[in-house]
Length: 258
Ligand code: FAD
Image 1: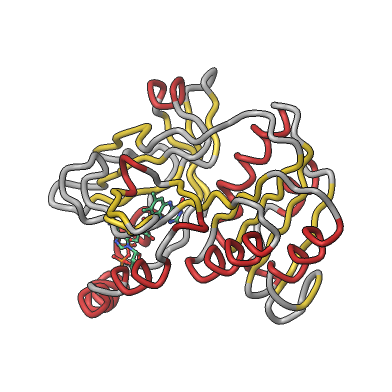
Image 2: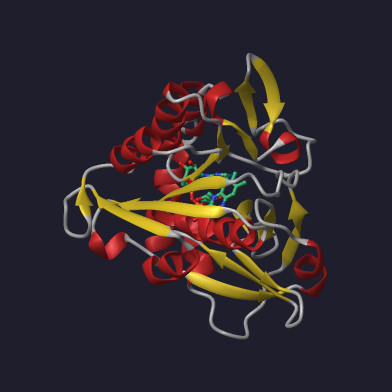
């Protein structure tokens, strides 16, 4: 689901890689969502999200013209944005949205962009045309082979890294995908920037809920990230921590669906 939110102050400052915390109503939970585009002239930001639980379901039910009670941002440490040379942008599932924003910015900065996007199946693959426009070359994969190459994004990544000099890999998507991409890139000595998605409550470094282990040290994804060097991230610890409210989330989703 894609929404455009009027937030002129956020739109005037946000850069690719940053996020907002939103709260839909009094007593509602605060959730982080990545800024997938911004238009400072119109004073709007774009958010693309997947309806996975109560809050994202409620967000998806908003009609054009409705308001969001609170929106805080732009949050997160801005990533390094410069001319690296050749950058491989890898997006998985809803992660393709922030990858498109990054690819556009990096292209404008003079980088050569090779993109690889993947999803479970054809109907779940978003923004293919937009990725095609911004990329010097685009590879598409689906798990079931319904579009593009059958398999995972790591398959074309391995081919690209074997064939040419790559200066940076950017990977945004499911935790398992970011772990696999970072592993493959490391085999070729290339650094991967990943955007982590731990459970985050305040987004400003106060609660510690979003702590992740990077290079053996505890870091807060909200203020130290959310982007980190994928080669240093303990993805297994992140997966485990993200499952800690599974039972409560299932109950809440059942209630929200009615
Ligand atoms: P719930 O049923 O509460 O949870 C479903 C799953 O979402 C959980 O298992 C957990 O893995 C995750 N989750 C739940 N609560 C939180 C929380 N407070 N913080 C983070 N994750 C949570 N999703 C998108 O679809 N688009 C985005 O652009 C996007 N950007 C994100 C940026 C950051 C920095 C982070 C940390 C997460 C981002 N997410 C994004 C994930 C999104 O925040 C969760 O899907 C959302 O919070 C789920 O809330 P829920 O009530 O709908 O589902």
